[in-house]
Length: 326
Image (cartoon, rainbow, N blue to C red; front, side):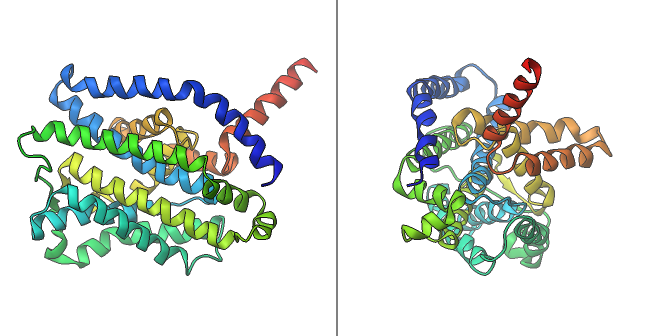
């Protein structure tokens, strides 16, 4: 592998020595929260953790594919409606709907990524934005099958005998921890290094028999699978799905959440992004014309920082320090 990729492993390994116990303490705290907080907070944090998984899907595509998506609300909606329709028609819980949504998300991601494999940068972003714009209309076109304007409810408990509100909290928590763990293992795997090499050094990757086009297909498929799983979790945590929940603004919220997390694939960054997109829309509900301005600034930050925001910020900090001392 190229030297830049192997050198990038050094800080990752150095941080992992304290990141694991830190995350373990955070998970223990989150697991204990239902015993200390009321029902409203349990509901809100459960939705936040489901949104954190959705943020990870956007961050994964940005880090491993080097591309920005403004259409992940499409995959989010697909996963959510998978769970809701399976529960309504087959009387099966999210325990079945979640794996179905994951597998279907992979196939749907490949179906979109293959014909658009020649697109990149702003052109791919616009193509994904078309997905986000189409979501509400597609749902309404399905009519009663998708519940129409009223949407569908998700109320079947996967575990009998356990309070449903606790299941709506702990399932997103378990899923979030599992996704973070798997992404950490993926980062240390040969496949993860191959995707990073294809992103940064496409010619070197092709010399190893791994083309950039295949890498982008793989990154988009994995990202879509995570987003579809997040949609299934969000439907279960929020107990309802409707067309108004999956608009272009939803896709922008996810992208902004990824910016807030600095495209981190860790637990703390994902929770920060999930908390931002869960709480900020409520806070800004009365801000009127300021909402598009604020989110436009967030999109501008995405363009400036690129696909490696942490490294970009470090370079800016180094330049500022040199200017101050020089």
